[in-house]
Amino acid sequence: MKKKVLGIIGGVGPLATMLLGEMIVKRTKAKSDQQHVNMVITNNTSIPDRTTYILDRSKANPVPVMISDATKLISIGAEVLAVPCNTAHSFYQDIQQGAGIQMVHMIDETAKRAAQIGAKKVGILATTGTLTTSVYQLACQRAGVQPVVPDEETQKLVMSIIYDDVKASQPVDFLKWQQIISKMDDLSCDYMILGCTELSIVKKELNLGDTYIDSLMVLAESSILACGYELND
Image 1 (cartoon, rainbow, N blue to C red):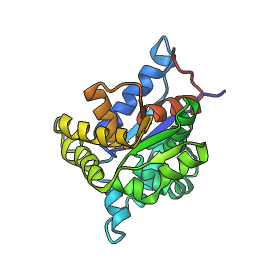
Image 2 (cartoon, helix red, strand yellow):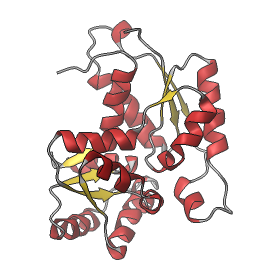
Image 3 (cartoon, helix red, strand yellow):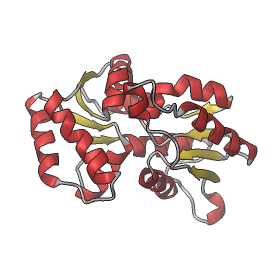
């Protein structure tokens, strides 16, 4: 398979963008610089907040900015696109149609991964914007996995970790995280999907175990394969 150049529409958020690049390098089967995935990355922090727009359509629309960034990436050689933001996949069709090239669908790939590892009932930890559009719930149902979403109070804690901790460059509040997981355990989830790329930062910071399906790692691995490279062992 011809090797393709990966374009990453980043800045959504900035730390997740950098972590995605690191994940791709670490998961690619390569013995030299030249065998790694050729990537071009934007880290456009001016992209409007996706959840804010989903919850209030009078706010700034992130889609035109993301399509503009995609066009820039394509102009310098990108042949496959990846977006390290689950909530942005609520606008997947619009972004892909605007870009005109393949875009890896992180949410579909994550739901498929859940099915592949035998998950039956998965907790969806994501932004309120992502949950409002039901993109994860629908993807899990298509994959044959039962999705479970947090109750209102637990969701407030999830959003606090995403916005008050990770996006604000603060340490993750472990007590808040424990409360979230306790509530989801009460709902008999056998796996948790980290359906926000800021939560991938939480996984790394807290050294979370194998019962967490990291959507950012799934995006990294799916992007490697989509560009014609192999995963390392």
